[in-house]
Image (cartoon, rainbow, N blue to C red; front, side, top):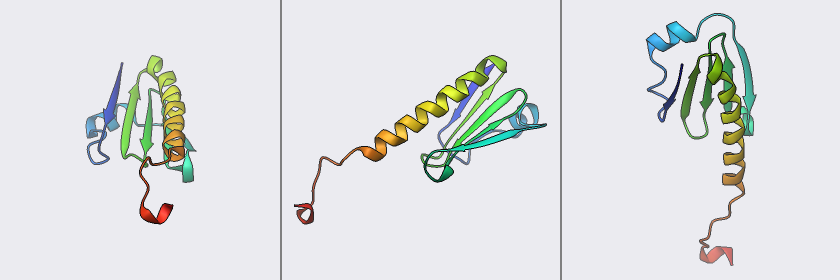
Length: 95
């Protein structure tokens, strides 16, 4: 059905989307450092909250639900690599 990506925690998802897709039983899983990535699986949708980068993603429809789990893996890898990167710049105190 669709994938809705929100780059701002204040814009996601709309009231209509919540009413249509985010009702009924749900299953929650946390991932990442300090559990800052939350995956909520509903019957017809999966919602991902990434509190590290303040990104929200809503996957709607049965076919797109699997994509949500792939996206969580991608986010975990991204944040791990981002955390391991060393800054190419050094201050005088780093010598």
